[in-house]
Image 1 (cartoon, helix red, strand yellow):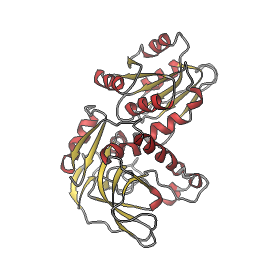
Image 2 (cartoon, one colour):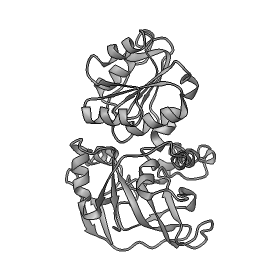
Image 3 (tube, one colour):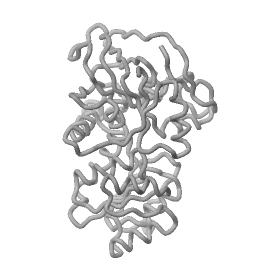
Image 4 (cartoon, rainbow, N blue to C red):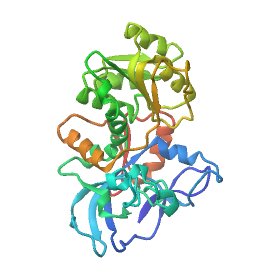
Length: 346
């Protein structure tokens, strides 16, 4: 089969031919319908050989949906032909966190060498992929695979980030989304669907600010050195109750802290290497700072339910498998409108 692999440190990913996978006991073989392209992949491909925690080559793609092609021995609950989404942050399934469905915070994944597809295990940008357990599959139940596949990360990650702050997003509150790209434009929609807060979107690109307005942002602000002051002006000096930073670079994390309200939440989702100091006087009183990772299995089900209800519509660009390297080039250059989706089987 064909697959997109990251094969050499520092090199671009390439389409190669690899053996067709076969499911072992307890595993599921999917014929991949759609696979997502993500900035996380670019972050991984920027690491040095010493930083990489897994061997190469690696088949990319941690967002995947597909059709069940074969079941390994002992698998129940699914049948060949079922259309499913893949829950990506695999865990051991048995530890305290996994028992709660929080496999994104599995306590034993590192010890046991368990890694997500596309981030250590063979991923979804291939004609077929192996899913290690049927518990990592969620039925699509009629959702369009192209629209659904980004929800497994670009939907799940902002949903998880927003959900913890819902008690603060009351009428009259303000939520700021920094970075209106693949995750950010979904976050805007989730905030509008789940809260009564005013939603302010920040970005450096006018086309992404336009996308944010299209999907429901009440206000858009250029993400520059004056952004924090602008947000404070928009809120009458109060600041934002919730700031979601989907860039995570030093300038944006600094802005996030500067625009947060007293008792606000700052959530750093992006992988841009920024950090925010916490201590008396460093931030407004009782500001909480967190850096979450992905989301739970139950939350993925909730996100897909929101999509079925029409509350979330991911803007996508589609590419064939042979054009997948181009999709990564466009993403790296900031030229993807929303989310890039690969169609490995046409």
